[in-house]
Amino acid sequence: MSTTGDTKAAGIIQSRTLNLPFDNIDTDQIIPAQFLTTTEREGLGRFCFFHWRFNPDGSSKAEHPLMHHVPAEQQVLVAGPNFGCGSSREHAPWALMDLGFRAVISSRFADIFRNNSIKNGLLPVVMEQTVMEFLLAHPNHPVRIDIAAGKLEVSGLGTFSFPLDPFAAYCLAQGIDQLDFLLRQETDIARYENASSPQSP
Image 1 (cartoon, rainbow, N blue to C red):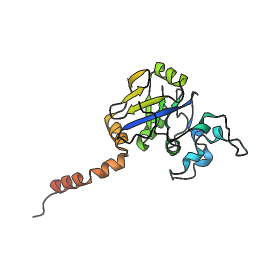
Image 2: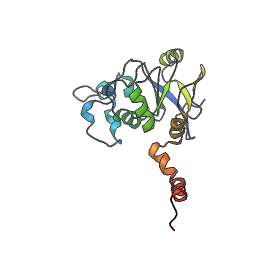
Image 3: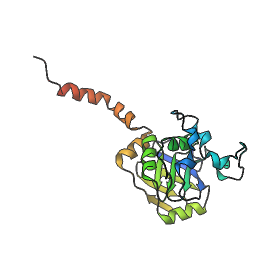
Image 4: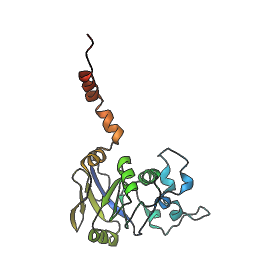
């Protein structure tokens, strides 16, 4: 299995992991409330886990795992259960994606965070406890995710299925959102409307 994380094949995420072995990571920890004043996605990565990465004086917490994150190689975040709990904010998946993550693996996600992630292009992968224990015990581990097939391959452990409805899988594999999907059907929609509209006498 390649470990470089630069796979370009549609619907495939091939990467090493970055571990945050904590339970109940909430959206205010992912992106604190003071950084929610923008509706722009770009640049939010610098505020992601801001209080975990920086001291009050602005200096970095060099010992924190996130300070050693290599986005080109570590595009998959592994975390404890109940990831994304707390208040609803689309900024949370935006910030994670801008920081370089394409997927998050956990044994359980907060429902609103999971829905926001899917709609915005971040893949939430729900895994059984035995897989989580292995991943959390092996940081920086190579994995391969086939989004369309709903499969996670963990090097040295095996291949495991995760739940993802077909429409979400299609959009995530193609790198599009729901609006993009509708725009791709514009020609067919126009053809249908023309065929269905009453003909003038």
